Length: 130
Image (cartoon, rainbow, N blue to C red; front, side, top):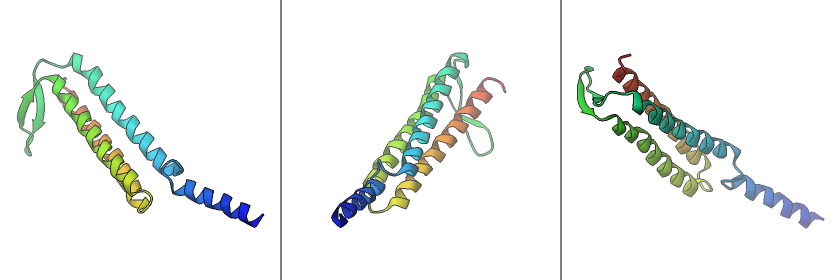
């Protein structure tokens, strides 16, 4: 009886320390992936309505210093995907030993997705004359 309780307790502990058993980590992954897909969707739907050439970068004083085709906006969500992939790999590798570090990596990846989305929105808005 005591052994059965210990085994059940150790299974719960292993489940809680595994990546799949960590609800906060799963929420962070889901939110980050959804944010990344939302940025891809936004950019993809915005591209047809943009001019043939558009500003892609502004310098520190607000002057355009890079002009390109609207399809180049897809680099923004691609950067978000690279950050997500790198942070996800590091988080999974670190999770068992450093659970807080894994959470920080994935919640930071979500912040990157939001910044990338904001950058895309600003570029699209300015290119559309807004």
